[in-house]
Length: 166
Image 1: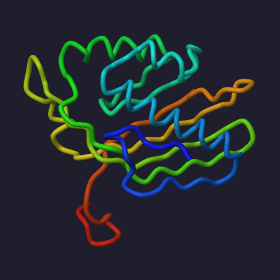
Image 2 (image 1 turned 180 degrees about the horizontal axis):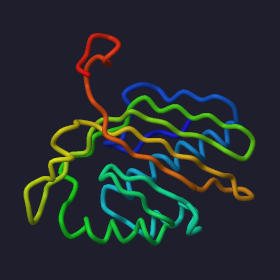
Image 3 (image 1 turned 135 degrees about the vertical axis):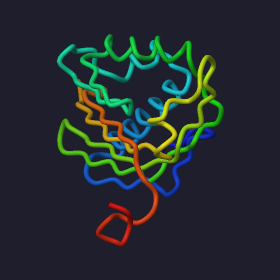
Protein backbone atom coordinates (compact mmCIF):
# COMPACT_ATOMS: atom_id res chain seq x y z
CA UNK A 1 0.00 0.00 0.00
CA UNK A 2 1.12 3.56 -0.76
CA UNK A 3 2.51 5.37 2.27
CA UNK A 4 1.20 8.84 3.07
CA UNK A 5 3.64 11.70 2.60
CA UNK A 6 4.86 13.18 5.88
CA UNK A 7 2.18 15.46 7.31
CA UNK A 8 -0.63 13.67 5.43
CA UNK A 9 -0.91 10.49 7.48
CA UNK A 10 -4.52 9.26 7.84
CA UNK A 11 -6.16 9.05 11.26
CA UNK A 12 -6.90 5.37 10.51
CA UNK A 13 -5.88 2.92 7.76
CA UNK A 14 -7.63 3.53 4.42
CA UNK A 15 -10.51 1.18 3.59
CA UNK A 16 -10.92 -0.20 0.06
CA UNK A 17 -13.91 -1.78 -1.66
CA UNK A 18 -13.21 -3.29 -5.09
CA UNK A 19 -10.46 -2.74 -7.62
CA UNK A 20 -7.04 -4.26 -8.07
CA UNK A 21 -4.06 -3.55 -5.85
CA UNK A 22 -2.68 -1.35 -8.63
CA UNK A 23 -5.96 0.64 -8.82
CA UNK A 24 -5.98 1.05 -5.04
CA UNK A 25 -2.39 2.27 -4.97
CA UNK A 26 -2.93 4.69 -7.87
CA UNK A 27 -6.08 6.16 -6.30
CA UNK A 28 -4.57 6.54 -2.84
CA UNK A 29 -1.51 8.21 -4.38
CA UNK A 30 -3.80 10.50 -6.42
CA UNK A 31 -5.59 11.48 -3.22
CA UNK A 32 -2.39 12.27 -1.34
CA UNK A 33 -1.01 14.08 -4.40
CA UNK A 34 -4.09 16.31 -4.39
CA UNK A 35 -3.49 17.47 -0.82
CA UNK A 36 0.22 18.03 -1.40
CA UNK A 37 -0.44 20.27 -4.41
CA UNK A 38 -3.47 21.94 -2.74
CA UNK A 39 -1.37 23.03 0.20
CA UNK A 40 0.98 25.03 -2.03
CA UNK A 41 -1.54 25.81 -4.84
CA UNK A 42 0.57 23.94 -7.43
CA UNK A 43 -1.48 24.10 -10.63
CA UNK A 44 1.01 22.10 -12.70
CA UNK A 45 0.78 19.18 -10.27
CA UNK A 46 -3.01 19.43 -10.19
CA UNK A 47 -3.18 19.25 -14.00
CA UNK A 48 -1.55 15.80 -13.81
CA UNK A 49 -4.31 14.32 -11.62
CA UNK A 50 -7.47 16.22 -12.62
CA UNK A 51 -9.23 15.77 -15.95
CA UNK A 52 -9.25 19.20 -17.66
CA UNK A 53 -12.68 18.90 -19.35
CA UNK A 54 -14.74 22.07 -18.88
CA UNK A 55 -17.88 20.06 -18.09
CA UNK A 56 -16.32 18.71 -14.87
CA UNK A 57 -17.76 20.47 -11.82
CA UNK A 58 -15.89 21.04 -8.56
CA UNK A 59 -17.56 22.30 -5.34
CA UNK A 60 -15.32 24.24 -2.95
CA UNK A 61 -15.63 24.90 0.80
CA UNK A 62 -16.19 28.57 -0.01
CA UNK A 63 -19.69 27.63 -1.21
CA UNK A 64 -19.08 28.08 -4.93
CA UNK A 65 -18.94 25.73 -7.93
CA UNK A 66 -16.09 25.74 -10.42
CA UNK A 67 -16.41 24.34 -13.95
CA UNK A 68 -13.33 22.72 -15.40
CA UNK A 69 -9.74 22.68 -14.26
CA UNK A 70 -8.99 26.18 -15.58
CA UNK A 71 -11.82 27.65 -13.50
CA UNK A 72 -10.49 25.89 -10.39
CA UNK A 73 -6.98 27.20 -11.08
CA UNK A 74 -8.37 30.76 -11.06
CA UNK A 75 -9.49 30.35 -7.44
CA UNK A 76 -6.04 28.97 -6.59
CA UNK A 77 -4.48 32.05 -8.24
CA UNK A 78 -6.72 34.19 -6.03
CA UNK A 79 -5.94 32.34 -2.77
CA UNK A 80 -2.21 31.95 -3.48
CA UNK A 81 -1.81 35.71 -2.88
CA UNK A 82 -3.90 35.67 0.30
CA UNK A 83 -2.83 32.62 2.28
CA UNK A 84 -0.22 29.95 2.80
CA UNK A 85 -0.28 26.67 4.68
CA UNK A 86 0.81 27.05 8.29
CA UNK A 87 0.39 23.40 9.29
CA UNK A 88 -0.75 20.35 7.36
CA UNK A 89 -3.71 18.63 8.95
CA UNK A 90 -3.17 15.08 7.79
CA UNK A 91 -6.02 13.05 6.38
CA UNK A 92 -8.74 11.09 8.13
CA UNK A 93 -11.06 8.18 7.45
CA UNK A 94 -10.26 7.55 3.78
CA UNK A 95 -12.66 5.20 1.96
CA UNK A 96 -12.04 4.22 -1.68
CA UNK A 97 -14.76 2.39 -3.62
CA UNK A 98 -13.84 1.12 -7.09
CA UNK A 99 -16.36 -0.11 -9.64
CA UNK A 100 -14.81 -0.85 -13.02
CA UNK A 101 -13.47 2.38 -14.50
CA UNK A 102 -15.02 4.64 -11.82
CA UNK A 103 -13.89 5.26 -8.26
CA UNK A 104 -15.23 7.22 -5.30
CA UNK A 105 -12.87 8.55 -2.63
CA UNK A 106 -14.32 9.96 0.59
CA UNK A 107 -12.55 11.37 3.62
CA UNK A 108 -13.46 13.20 6.79
CA UNK A 109 -10.05 14.65 7.41
CA UNK A 110 -8.36 16.91 9.85
CA UNK A 111 -8.28 20.67 9.25
CA UNK A 112 -5.76 22.61 7.26
CA UNK A 113 -4.24 25.50 9.17
CA UNK A 114 -3.73 28.57 7.00
CA UNK A 115 -1.81 31.76 7.58
CA UNK A 116 -3.74 34.65 6.04
CA UNK A 117 -1.32 37.10 4.43
CA UNK A 118 -3.45 40.15 3.74
CA UNK A 119 -6.56 39.95 5.92
CA UNK A 120 -8.28 38.20 8.78
CA UNK A 121 -9.39 34.62 8.16
CA UNK A 122 -12.85 34.51 6.52
CA UNK A 123 -15.78 33.63 8.77
CA UNK A 124 -16.67 30.50 6.77
CA UNK A 125 -13.33 28.96 7.82
CA UNK A 126 -13.65 30.01 11.47
CA UNK A 127 -17.01 28.38 12.06
CA UNK A 128 -16.23 24.77 11.05
CA UNK A 129 -13.06 22.97 12.07
CA UNK A 130 -12.62 20.39 9.35
CA UNK A 131 -13.34 19.56 5.74
CA UNK A 132 -15.04 16.54 4.21
CA UNK A 133 -13.94 15.38 0.78
CA UNK A 134 -15.66 13.43 -1.98
CA UNK A 135 -13.73 12.76 -5.21
CA UNK A 136 -15.00 10.94 -8.27
CA UNK A 137 -12.31 9.51 -10.53
CA UNK A 138 -12.40 7.83 -13.93
CA UNK A 139 -9.76 5.54 -15.37
CA UNK A 140 -8.47 6.94 -18.64
CA UNK A 141 -6.75 4.04 -20.32
CA UNK A 142 -4.14 3.32 -17.64
CA UNK A 143 -4.29 6.35 -15.37
CA UNK A 144 -6.92 7.59 -12.92
CA UNK A 145 -8.07 11.25 -13.17
CA UNK A 146 -10.38 13.25 -10.94
CA UNK A 147 -13.56 14.42 -12.70
CA UNK A 148 -15.53 15.77 -9.73
CA UNK A 149 -14.83 16.89 -6.17
CA UNK A 150 -17.03 18.14 -3.41
CA UNK A 151 -15.46 19.74 -0.38
CA UNK A 152 -17.71 20.71 2.50
CA UNK A 153 -17.13 21.92 6.03
CA UNK A 154 -17.83 19.47 8.83
CA UNK A 155 -18.91 19.89 12.41
CA UNK A 156 -17.52 18.07 15.46
CA UNK A 157 -19.56 16.30 18.09
CA UNK A 158 -22.75 14.28 17.88
CA UNK A 159 -25.21 14.61 15.01
CA UNK A 160 -28.64 16.13 15.77
CA UNK A 161 -30.20 12.64 15.91
CA UNK A 162 -27.58 11.68 18.50
CA UNK A 163 -28.28 14.59 20.87
CA UNK A 164 -26.16 17.24 19.14
CA UNK A 165 -27.27 20.73 18.12
CA UNK A 166 -29.76 21.15 15.27
